[in-house]
Length: 219
Ligand code: SIN
Ligand code: FE2
Image (cartoon, rainbow, N blue to C red):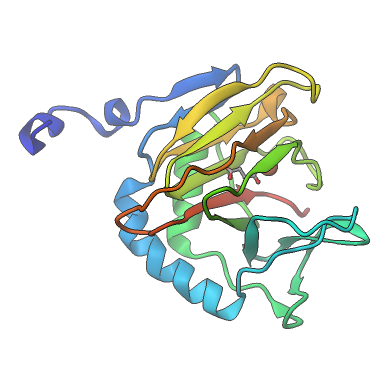
């Protein structure tokens, strides 16, 4: 499509939500306009709080490398899953949530019918080809009335969006660079995961996929 044709669409039409549940939507390319502001901010965060492979409570090393920014960061170790105000690697607070991400998350949540939304935690997941995330529920947050906003960058992935039981059939949703998924309300505790990342080379992020999961985890 030529730029002149794109200009005929309003922003909301270009980001037309695709509903994948009663209270869950994919917002195609919703984050694209912010990517060039987001990437340098992420680079700075990862310099202060490096990506690392955490250990699950069962003693397995996670294949996905992760870090966090915001007042709270999600961590896993032999003691369990939880949110902490300090990065256990440095014992320093996690880097601040950049304004561009706060604002993007609030706008995405609003587009899916959840306003206002002020996240205090952003999990940064980095996948390389072959990495997957098995079906799970996000249930370490204090209050499930807040939605989850998930931003995909880099290599495309297949997101699995299941039901309230692990055994429920999961929809497969293709997520590309700049896509945002929002789920909350009655869908807040639905199982979800990511199928093994296919090899590829993304022009901006190379052989990687980065997912940013924004949540309100604390009080
Ligand atoms: C997650 O569920 O924590 C991440 C989902 C994704 O990478 O898209
Ligand atoms: Fe999750």
